[in-house]
Image 1 (cartoon, rainbow, N blue to C red):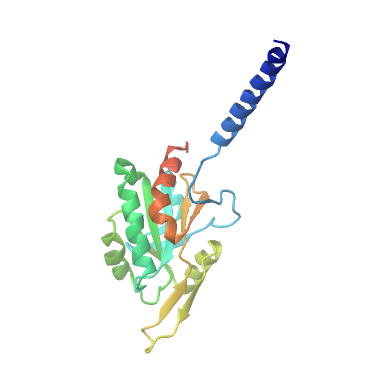
Image 2: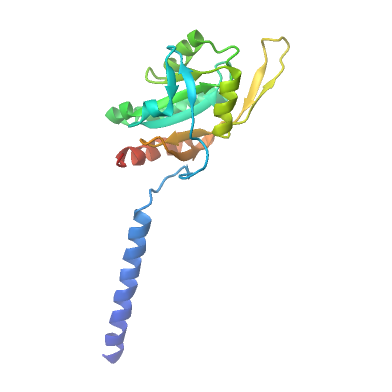
Length: 201
């Protein structure tokens, strides 16, 4: 009995410690994607929508923003990414309207507002295509650490663009929160969007 009396307080203390640690872990969102909350980049975006309306991140406060950089003549990664994002958004049901997907073209030379207006909403009518001149495009890409480089083709107009393929997610306050790898969109994005939609803000 003496052993049991001395063991009980230890057992209780161990249980309390487990509960406290669990509460601490529970206080931090359990994202599947890479959590980059607090990253010192991805703070500014000043471009134009295909409707001719100037856009900044402040325009989308109150919504969770999914941001992707690409170009409309991209043969594989861009359409695949947009299609997978669209599928993830649709699984949210009515909450899909609380998410804004932004597609930033890295090819302002060929991606006119008219082309963006046809291409981007084809994946989901709620998606918005953004563009700027080359200087503005480079500024936004640099701020989000997105690499892109033109590769010459057989003719001057048939070039391709090598570029980063990650998707970024910003919360309802406009803060950069997640880095989603291209190959993880289908499995991770919807789960993480639900967490961000439940956050206050």
